[in-house]
Amino acid sequence: MPEGPSIVILKELVQPFKGKKIISVEGNSKQDIQRLAGQKVIDFTSWGKHFLICFKGFAVRIHFMLFGSYRINEQKESKARLSLQFKKGEINFYACSVQFVEDDIDLVYNWTSDVMNDNWDATAAKQKLIEQPSMLACDALLDQQIFSGVGNIIKNEVLFRIRVHPESEVGRLPIQQMEELISEARNYSFDFLEWKKNYVLKKHWLAYTKKTCPRCNIPLIKKLAGKTKRRTFFCTNCQELYK
Image 1 (spheres, rainbow, N blue to C red):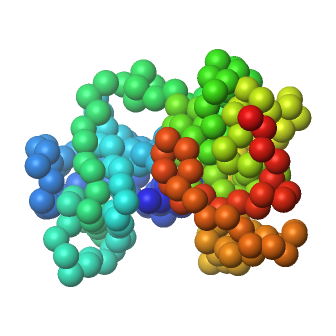
Image 2: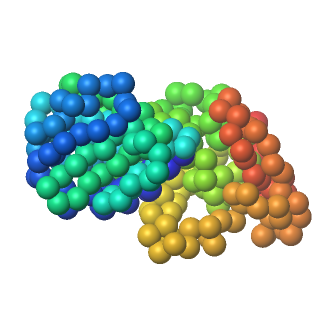
């Protein structure tokens, strides 16, 4: 599942189509995608893992789920869920969720919870954590209403960076660790963006998919942790459990 930084990259790649009219539409989406034919793209934006194509009066939300992908100015052999043809070029989306957003997206989305948005509000994130003291750190980072855009890679790497055990209760975290969790969720997301653009993301993983702790040189624990049951990699020696 693409994380927030990957959606930001997509948003940047499709900018040449901004302001352009869609000539034709194809795809196996069950939505009324033909309403897009003849429409002019007003803007492309994103909220966390949601990619948004904005038109006058409505928007299309693309969520890539677990196996979604896209192609720009080229096609895969499989049938596209949504294919947008322009006078010069095309955008194709595969194995994803396509939904229409009829309301003003500024009313639908809270931009202050998106860790990569200019309107990101760390103070609001801290208050949300304080209000859910029993939530585990690994679940908190994946909560899109608190850290929109953070996915499983970022979760693992942030917790390793700040030396916090993933099953720590956020209400038990010392203030310094809670503030580091919040700030590093954003910092690592921008590091992720830069590394992915340069095709070196995996080289920088310290915990995710790793077998040995690079700090302690002992085996990392691999576990389906928290309510989310996502793959979690951590060191019981240098990542403290607050519980």
